[in-house]
Image (cartoon, rainbow, N blue to C red; front, side, top):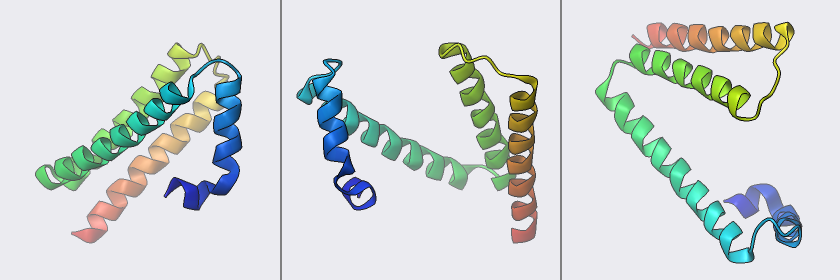
Length: 108
């Protein structure tokens, strides 16, 4: 799937990452494989959770997850956030939540 989306641009990027000395071919391939497996498992768990909880609860939980990811990224990477980026992130998160809630109410 990745090759269909990325095409052959992946190969030079992979080789450049190995050439930089940060990774060996085996370690980078292992990390890419683990990343794919982790994403697959995340989707499986999300699908199972959606079947067990109310869609509104799932939407709220998904929105909280987005907030946690943004805050963790800011802390982990020491990224300064301006007032504008805080307001923009808040609007985007609130919009996503409201859209999810509106779509769930229409489905009922």
